[in-house]
Amino acid sequence: MQPDLLPDVIAIDGPAASGKSTIGLMLAQRLGYLCLDTGSMYRALTLAAILKGISPDNENDITRLASDCDLAIIPLSGETDGRHYTVMLNGVDVTWDLRSPQVDAAVSQVSTYPGVRSRMVERQRAVGRRGRVVMIGRDIGTVVMPDAGLKLYITASPEERARRRLIDRVRQGNDDEYQSILADVVRRDQMDGSRVLSPMRPAVDAITIDTTGRSAEVVIEEIMSILNLNHFQPEGRA
Ligand code: DC
Image (cartoon, rainbow, N blue to C red; front, side, top):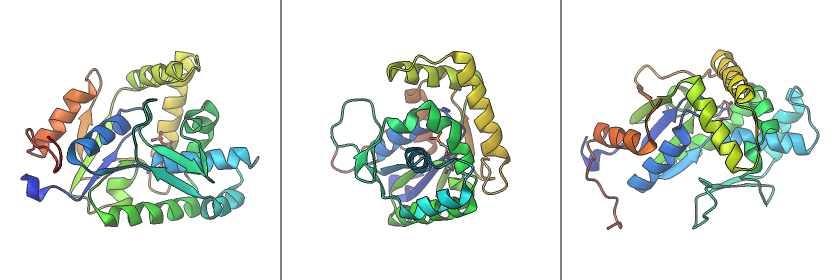
């Protein structure tokens, strides 16, 4: 692939903690693209429901909330606390709150609701239409952006994913147990992969990359060579 033939939309799907968010952000930075992590949209809605005391089982109220809540995802502008972007919910920075065990426990349920998905997909496609975007999720290559020029499915073993999530949590000050994180990762894989609407799965034309035991840098080099861009620098960069 030549640099002038770069895909306008790169879809990255894969299970929880597979490394897809880190890799998606690094890739977007290398290409000078916007990065949209759609999981954060489902997480922000889940947090909004928790804050309002709405049960994750209450489909009607959660669907209404999906239309009503004011959600914005803002690219990095010099923050150094390890965030990949800033998420504002009703004007409040909730970036780190999205990663709490309470949100982890409820988000797969919230994201099964058809009314929720249609509103989220609408917003995601609006970003996709602007182009030059790396979009990360579970159903980007299959449902949200089926015409994406490059589709990647990033995966890793459940044990490796649980270890990565544990490291993230300890960094954030939550000392969770590895076994309970592993159980949660497996539970979410099961829910995300078996739901009726837009289940998590690789698109037929996706390239699957297993990141188990590999650093993000090594994976990025593999993707750059898929793009034929090993020496590519985006415009405006040295
Ligand atoms: O990638 P993540 O762990 O932040 O995603 C959180 C949840 O959101 C995940 O369990 C399933 C849901 N999700 C989804 O259903 N569709 C997407 N495109 C992205 C996330």
